[in-house]
Amino acid sequence: MTDKFDTSLPPFDRLTATEQHTLRSALDVVYFRAGETVITAGDDCHQLYIIIKGNIEEYSVTSNPSATTPKTADKQQYKETFAHYANDDLFDVSAQLKGQSRHTFKACEDTICYALPRELFVLCYQNNSQFAAYFDTDLTKRQALLDEAQHQQNLAEFILTKIDDDNIQPCLVVPHDTSLLAVTQQMKNNELDAAFITLNGLPQYGIVTRTDLLHATLLDGHPHDTPVSTIATTPVVSVNKGDYLFNAMLAMTRQKVKRVQVCDDNSVVGMLDLTQVLSLFSTHSHVLTLRIARSETIEELALAANSQQTLVETLFNNGIRTLFVMELIAAVNEQIIEKAFKLIVPTHLQPHCCLMVMGSEGRGEQILKTDQDNALIIEDGINWPDCHAVMAQLTHTLQQLGYPLCPGNVMVSNPHWVNSQRSWLQRITQLCRQGDPDSMMELAILADSHAVAGNQALQTPLQLCLHQQLADQERLLSIFTRPALQFSIPLTIFGNLKAGKHGLNIKQGGIFPIVHGIRALALEHNISPNNTFARIAALTTQRVLEQRTADNLSEALKLFIKLRLHQQLSQQEDGQQHHIDISTLSRAERDVLRHSLHVVKKFKEWLGYHYQIRD
Image 1 (cartoon, rainbow, N blue to C red):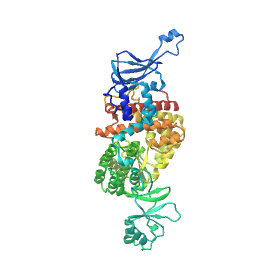
Image 2 (tube, helix red, strand yellow; image 1 turned 60 degrees about the vertical axis):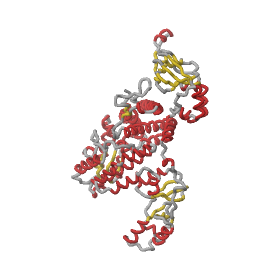
Image 3 (cartoon, rainbow, N blue to C red; image 1 turned 30 degrees about the vertical axis):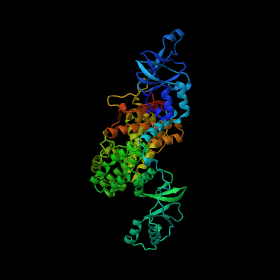
Image 4 (cartoon, rainbow, N blue to C red; image 1 turned 135 degrees about the vertical axis):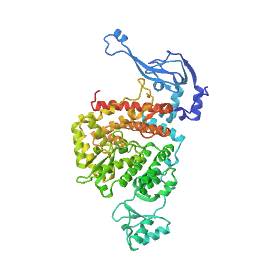
């Protein structure tokens, strides 16, 4: 029996207390000298090994298939190394399930291992689904297991809280022709501060609040018998019973409202208001958005914007899933930039221009603030002599709000990124005709553009033109996609994680190949969403990607973003730091990261084949 074995390490922490005791009782300790063969390819494998100290190499020896005789084949054998295993690593897992080893395992140095009988491993694998999931080759299942383990360590109560009868507030629903006086009386009798209004002939509702009624009668002079539908606000933002309260908060944040309607099978069953939801959350994202909305000066807006990182840290440390954090922060960023635009751009010009954000901000995938990527569309025929000075001021203002200057000068302070709508359409067409790598990269920047302020309808023709110019254009898409294959995957020839002196560059080696490759496929197949995860889902629906490939790419990208964010927060770095210190990762995290990078490697190979890209 080996009492020193640490069963808190994955995947053994998935075992029950009884299973862990049985496992410790069955473990033995074995020793291998440097150069000694531990497992030979083709042999029966009766034990799973867990390395205590040392290094094991997994390899196979094959003959050259071009050799003409058995004699020359023997001389032209070559060795292919698959992996190296070090402290806490397991081998050979596949042999435990298949009975035989496909490869040879050899000690590169004196090595000490725990040995677990194959029969016990298989028994645990068959009887414990969480233990078995750790060894699944499907990245989605493995990442779900890792997420579950992390949530058990730091479980955020609010992410598990659903909208149900315990937290739904009662609501008042009145017909559209009810008088203002009658609605006021009913709200008072029921001690409510809002009421939903049925709209004549429409399947939706309106809403009135005490403030609406007060303004209608005292400020606007409406008679007491005025139908309440006259002053109702429409449409009402709705959430579903059974959904997460977090999603209700997200809806309030995006729509800038303080109340949402709760429905169950298309029937109104109650409401939620801001005060109630905030009482259930330790994060005050809606308070932040209210501060942004109420800002009347750049200084006030800066104070609100500076609290954004605290919000990210609170959400992340409370175990909120990465996609939720990403979506919420995208909404907050959008509101900050929109407010800056309204404070800087003259009011009479705001309906005649459109501010676009691009890059990770345009895709809604920015969490911590990164460098600015933005552009401006001006309505055709508008004369704006001071435009350059105003845009320079806007760029400086965004810098004050925590958005660093773009090293590539992709900002509205650069006249190259400020044009009339007609000029933008002409440029997109010209870039496609030029078809060189620089032109394709500029198109890639525009492909992620997202309108955030001003007349947002001005951007729609640009997106339509871009998709029309690139859809089904094999030669252009081949040039467009090539940068996705430019950076090497940070894996050694042995399949292990590879890091430089600054760490493992997860943006170049993991995030960019997925984002840019998916961007190319979205343009090819005329898919309009900007967000990478939404693009992956659409590509799956169109059967461009297989479901398993799509799931693995999504999970890999989420993991890369999550690991990068964790290190940025722990080291007090900004959103421009893209290196990961792999020495701080747990064994399970290193294992899933390695698996995720192999997913990227396969995706890059597929892209090269799909677009006929030859190095």
